[in-house]
Structures are given as C-alpha cells and as structure tokens.
Amino acid sequence: MESKTDVLLGLQWGDEGKGKIVDVLAPAYDIVARFQGGPNAGHTIEVGDKKFVLHTIPSGIFNKDTINVIGNGVLIDPFVFSKELDALASSGVDVSKNVLISRKAHLILPTHRLLDAVYEKAKGKEKIGSTLKGIGPAYTDKTARKGLRIGDIILSDFNHRYQKIRQQHIKIALLYNADLENITIEGIPFEAYEKTWLEKLKILQQFEKTDSEYFLNKALKKGKRILAEGAQGTMLDIDFGAYPFVTSSSTTSAGVCSGLGIPPAKVGKVFGIFKAYCTRVGSGPFPTELFDNTGEELRKKGHEFGATTGRPRRCGWLDLPALKYAIMLNGVTELKMMKADVLSGFPEVKVATGYKINGKLTERVPFNPDRTDIDVVYKTFEGWNDKLEEITVFDELPDPLKNYIYFIETETGIPIKLVSVGPNRKETIVR
Ligand code: GDP
Ligand code: IMO
Ligand code: MG
Image: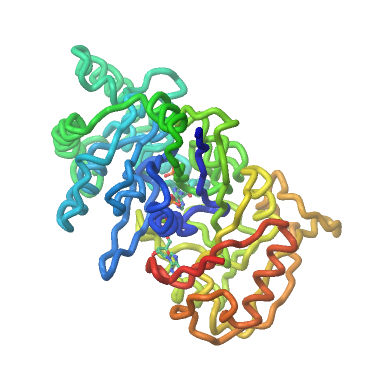
C-alpha cells in the first residue's frame, strides 16, 4: 500500500531538539530526509555517553537500517560535511552506504561564506546574527539561477563555472571594501580554506547521488515509511518569521514539498516540536525574552549555547500566540514538548497568552513583533521541584507540569504525544 511522508519540524526559533527526536523515531522509518537549510543547523544526538552534532547529515544516521537522504532543498558545504564524516567515522559510524545526496542540492562555496561575513559586517547594528555558514548568499545564487549544484561537480566545465562565480563574489566583496588579504573562514586564511574546500569536494564524489524526487516517490509507492526532518524553526522561516531576522529557506511543512519533490497530498502526519520555554540565538524580535536571573537560570539549566556556533541562546517563557501561529502554518497534527526537565525548580512558570498593543489585546503575531509598544500578557503556573529524568510514564509527572501540558493542549487543540525530560534517547516519555 502507498504510504505518506511524515514531517518533524521546529515550531519556535530552532534548537527545539529535532535531532534527538528524529533519532528516537528513526527505527520506525525506512528513510529520513532533510529538506532545507544547511550547516547553519546543529542537531544534537546523545547516543549512550557519546554526543554528536549533525549539520548536514540527517539524524537517522544512528539507526543502521535507515536510509538518509539529503534533499534538493538543502545546501551542502563540503568542508563542514567532511568534518561531520570524520566525527562519525571516529566513533565507528559508517555513512558510506546509507547516505544519498540529491544531485540538485546546491553547494556552499568558500566565497558564499566570505560574502555572508561581508554582508553581516555591513549591516552593523542591524546584523541578523547569521551563523556565517554562507546560507544567505548560497540561497541567493540559487534563486538568481547561478548557483552550482552537486550534480555539476562532475561536469567538464565545473572549474570554469566555479571560477566565474568566484570572480563575481570577489568583485562584490571588494565593493564592500572587504579586506581580502586578512579575511579568515573557520580561523583559516581564505586562500588556504579554499584549497581545503576544493580537496573536500572530492569526498562528495564518493557518495551515491540521487534524484530525490524519483527516489522518494518510488519509495512511497512501495509503502516505505519516510520522515522529513526540518532544520531551523518556523519563526525563522523566510516568509513567516520576523523578516529580515530569519534564515533564507522555507522551514515550514511547505518546504517539504519543494525541498524533496513530494506532492502535498503525500504529506502525512506533521510532528511539531517545541521547547517548554523559548530560546533564540542571533538577533531579532523575541517578545517573551527574559533579561533577568530567571533567563540566566534557564540558559544555565538548559545548557542553552548554540550547537553550531557556541553562542549563548537568549531565553524566555513559552509564547503561545507564536506557537499557535506555527501550528497553523504547518498543519501540525501532534505536538512534542522538549526540555520539560529544565523548568523543574522554578517557583512559578509563565506562558504568554497574548500581546497588548495600544491597549488592545491580540493573539496575532504582529507584522513587526519588535515594536516597543507591545505588552506581553502572561498566565502564571505553579512550579514543581521534582527531578524528571528518571520518569518514564506520563502519569508519574508532577501535577503542576501535567496542568501546564493540559493547558497548552486545550489552547492549541493539538495533543502533546511526547514529553522529553533529558537529552538522552531514554529520557523520553511517549503517551
Ligand atoms: P535541534 O537543532 O532542534 O536538533 O536542537 P539542538 O541540538 O541545537 O539543541 C537542543 C539541545 O537540547 C541539545 O543540546 C540536546 O542534547 C538537548 N536536549 C534535547 N532534548 C532535551 C531534553 O528534553 N532535556 C534537556 N535537558 N536537554 C535536551
Ligand atoms: P537548527 O536546525 C537556531 C538563526 C541564526 C540567525 C538566523 C539566520 O539547529 O535548529 P543563517 O545562518 O541561516 O543566515 O542565520 O537564523 N539560525 C538558527 N538558530 N537553530 C538553527 O538551526 C539555526 N539556523 C539559523 O542564529 O539568527
Ligand atoms: Mg540546533
């Protein structure tokens, strides 16, 4: 019987714990497929006492029977990709047989990273807080129809095309007065970085290439189970996030269709994943951000430091209007709540239920959520002190946490089917 593609994606500003849950769900799927983003993503998976951070490789990689597809909507940087391979290989994880790469996925060139840095610097105080992985410039070239794709690497004129676009990028960088002599990428002088990048490009050649649209649609016809893995989060979506403080791809379930070549009618369940509070890394509006000790405490207890850049994440209470917005945009059918354990020990826990703008209450995410006349309206919940990490059954969770969960379910109308109480696989409560 034909099957459908389930989707797991972030409902907030990224880092919700997508990697952990894809790894937990992987045994139930034949294929895990990334559909957008690139090495700006950092998906953490704890296997036993080992911790891995994946940037490009789908999080199904630790389940040996799962095929992992890097779809056409993804950006690949051979430099970052080869570092991921090395980290996996050093732990004995062989990716040579179960990773397929779309020929249509675009490459992040060294000069894309150069431009990312140049553009951010030029923005001054208005900087986006990009991860500087070249995402914006690479997607720009994709839509400008001059990017280079994985399938281009083997073409006889690849080098010519590479040099042509490289020259264009250098010209732009010079317009911005970039100091090309002294610019570094990952701490490496540009020219040396580029040399390594070109060497790592060869590694990509060893991987099986696919036309993911044919591969995945054929798999669905055969009844194979596919899970699409999102990167970033809904509030960073190019269209629906607080533009321009967004990433450059469609992070919502709409991105699954264009990023993998799967028609809308073949999308099945949509798992929306959210933290029991909120975090954001980089600049941009964050209405429930806490600037006090509570925010600091959340950061400390939740180890809220970026998996890709190490930057401290901004922390705040759960934003229900934003969560409802994300559920609406994605057509979420099931919720998964992460990091409930981090909220243990707070005397009270708050949830934003609305915004007051000019004295008028609204539940709509405003066009400009950074406006200074927004007052966030909160509902306060009794806290709990219990250690949750050892709990495996929903009924054993402390009552105040259950009340918190029931409230979110009632407000959103969507069931919370999974509660995560620690970073490890086994710290997962399925209802
Ligand atoms: P992703 O980008 O959505 O995959 O999330 P990240 O890996 O960037 O960030 C999530 C962080 O929270 C990682 O360090 C995870 O190991 C950790 N984590 C995931 N689930 C839980 C949880 O339920 N409790 C705690 N304390 N940490 C968690
Ligand atoms: P995962 O998949 C959190 C943020 C950056 C910046 C903005 C634009 O791990 O959840 P970009 O590099 O895309 O130009 O940055 O988006 N950002 C993320 N924040 N998690 C991510 O990915 C992110 N990817 C990008 O911090 O504010
Ligand atoms: Mg992350």
